[in-house]
Length: 444
Image (cartoon, rainbow, N blue to C red; front, side):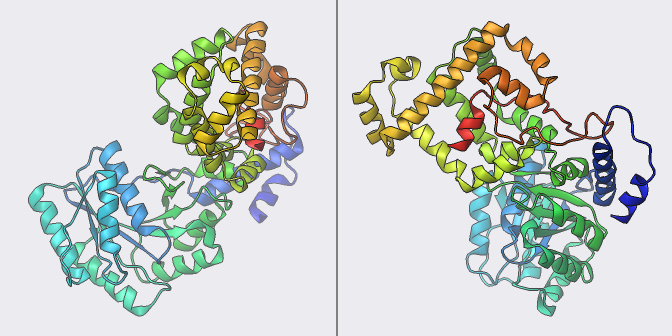
């Protein structure tokens, strides 16, 4: 705070921005510097096998994070990965890692009942050398709190395995406790980095500041959900943007590139350009949203949509998406292609088939009508090419207002940002608009 104040006081304000926006830029830069300025890569490009030891308390998501990291290394870096559970204290901990390994299509070390952690680690290294694995992930035992027995066990495992990376897994929602955990581990074990779990929660990344300051080690990854794909490299600039409520559009675009099927997207864009949008198209969009983490995850990455993210989380948007999918699946192909044929009798059948009510079916049809109407208005305005002009006039609010009429966007969306400051993500305007009808969909 003192550093940001020192930089801000007496500084001349650029013509193109307000004093408030320039202060946001200064705070943003200070946060990026605190978080480490640059992303830190995982050091696994060594003479195989590279050993990565995962440490942390029980309940921090260590075992799941081990499987996520293994899947990422296997799929994105083309490494042969072997996982081994050293947790002999927690019931079924080794079986849990084996199940996660099958789900992630990653090999796990066969379980030998009664074998102590140090011997399991030695067996894992021997198997990796004999079978040609590139990386060995060791999931060590957790405790409810840091104690001497835990530290002694970890030191013994580290002496045997000589890890190239020792990663501390910490729950970002535990607040000050996370700092105490980091202090305890950093004082006893030679950490090489930190992984923060549940970064998709309301904390937004404040714990990241504490982790970096206390351990002096880089934050390498962040867990962003429950799925085995929900882990991403930690980018200080993006997290600084999330902390300041600016969103993280870069991560959103990356996630979209990984999940959206381009051929389907091109077909949909061609239909939308003609002003056509049926329930099959809506179903495809919902499926893509689901693959990208749901509405809450998308809202959390867009500037000014933090308030909507909280509302969606409370409304259990995952459950809402399931209901919408169930209703769409209960319709015939004809009904999805021509929603106008859905009369009262058909609505009752759809509601019964999907476990919902007729009122919910009506809401779905109304939402589709609004989206279809927006497509037709877009066509009259000259197609998708006109959107760029809209974004220059009030950002998301201006764009949605132009498509859906005044008052369509909830107040506060497209809120404060960097105002076009160099090096600062976001701004007064969102970089692109939400799908037509998205705001009303979020409210429901």
